[in-house]
Image 1 (cartoon, rainbow, N blue to C red):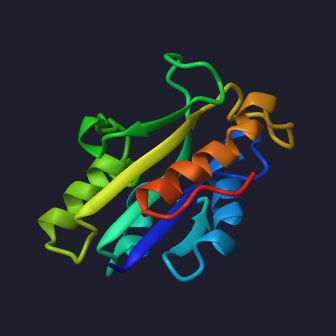
Image 2: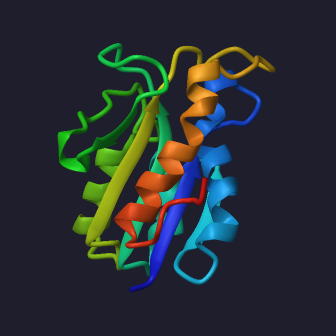
Length: 154
């Protein structure tokens, strides 16, 4: 099954780097199992990255306030609320998924989102919160488990 693992974020914005850093850690572990990529794109701009894959796993930072920083969670894409932006250019994942379906694009049927609860996704050049940084191995293990791969050796 053609699989994409995509780390989202910005590696100069403190905790927002968690998805990108996890993708970097997974590149070697998942070499023949999945295409592992990273991007700072968002919304509809992401659409072209998913085209042609049967399965996709998205890695990102999330700030819900419902979990302690460093908690790894899985988010059901169907539970994401649409973004009410000032422009149709500012859209989120729900709009991207809906657009792919509407246009009948070859979009992954199996689409999962793993995220880490963060404390500071906005500080430019800031250090990652220790709990968020320490969650990267657990995030990587969740991805490997989702793909049927063994966890990292301790």
